[in-house]
Length: 188
Image 1 (cartoon, rainbow, N blue to C red):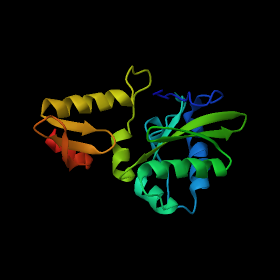
Image 2: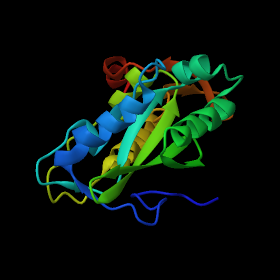
Image 3: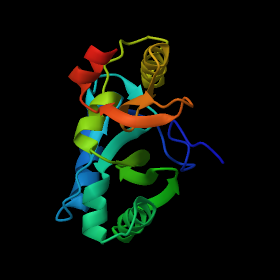
Image 4: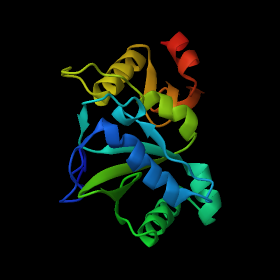
């Protein structure tokens, strides 16, 4: 498996200043208009900072909305249908894991948008929203690692795409404790 990150799915995708986050998001949500699917910005795109540059834009779309609009039988076929739909709207697309990658032209440049198809997107988006200070050596992945360490230290399991789980006797994911950020904070 190849992991695509940092805007490298499309060879000509270039980093972008946060001042164009709104323009990129408008193009994505414009293509989704009338579907009931809405792209929610996460990562640095959720809190754009003037002058800051990102390699790609991360957004979350709700899995249930994707399944309903495309009448898909499961998440995998829903992601494929979303990929094909965005391609039919004139975008170059690719898929990996739970992501549909979209090449979005803006002016003379093209930028990469990673659309993560996730259950309970509105709630889960909060797990991926952060405001990292300029020059910080940390990224969103570091926040997820800390959440995992906190959960593991207390015998629980953290899923950045679902929430906080109880571990069963074998140490595997069991029942969902919560996907509510405030409730998760109380558990941890």
